[in-house]
Amino acid sequence: SVPQLQNTLRHAYTIKRRSEPWLVPQGSLSKKESKNLKLPPQSLFNKTIALLFSKRSTRTRLAAETSATLLGGRALFLGKEDIQLGVNESARDSARVIGGMCQGIFARVGDHSEIEELAQHSPVPVLNALSSLWHPTQILADLLTLHEHAYLFTGELAPEKPSKQLPELRPLTIAYVGDANNILNDMLVTYPRLGHQLRVASPPQYRAPAEVWKRVEELGCDKAIWWGEDPREAVKGADVVVTDTWISMGQEAEKAQRLKDFEGYQVTEELCREGGANPNWQFLHCLPRKPQEVNDEVFYGPRSLVFPEADNRKWTIMALFDNLFGKWSLDGTADQK
Ligand code: CP
Ligand code: NVA
Image (tube, rainbow, N blue to C red):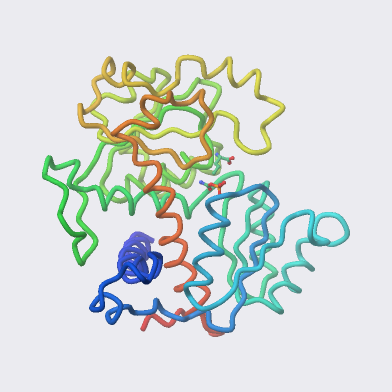
């Protein structure tokens, strides 16, 4: 829900402020700073979170492993070559066994039904680390990044010190240019509920699957979404331009066709100038990036927030781990103290 999402964002922001000093060499802190060092919540003390990943990952895996460490626990990486799942054992049995020894499961799967099945049979909470339909932890990192850079959208100067509380974000126009994939799906069901307008351009044969669109309509998000074919039209008035790879994990065999279909959809300065984006538009990409969907000028340029966005995978996943796995209790409620 929106309040839960906002709580998680605020929690991620606070946890980041509190934990960042632990990441710098301790010798470089002043006496006062060293004295003021506070541990993040140790809610995973003595706990293990299973990272059940059937696909590759850099950011999500790093964020999960380093977050578990800071929360006083451990993340156990179980790649598809490591365990019996999918070869000698069913998802149902694996969920029960892993959940019998770990206190949470963070799962990256192929088809979305696989995570539904894990969740149905796991005795402990299951969190989606990416599926064919959704990538919910990514949108949290994107939102945290936009909030932290809220001053860019009001024309103010960057604050000298980060504020104590999560900065407010004004309603934005957010454009997505490229493949209608799991990243876009989460944007469709999230941004409109937070008061932002979404403008999407993708080739006509690439559209959100029926189950995603059903959810978009149920949530009343469709009213804030413009969807067309022309990337220039999509970026009209955009404060933020987002894209993702045209070839998601598992679609490698479609590469040649996709490169042809997405010709003309590369995010460039020229495209956004011609399309009439806000002259101060900012760029987001979940990574990993391939060179086709955005050129180097934008990707490595001053508008690009992609690396702060990648860093924020950690703080948002840490906030989720703390709330979902650390404070979870058997009666199904999370202790919010
Ligand atoms: N953005 C993201 O999920 O990256 P990884 O696939 O490297 O985890
Ligand atoms: N759409 C991409 C996102 C990777 C983080 C994929 O599913 O491969």
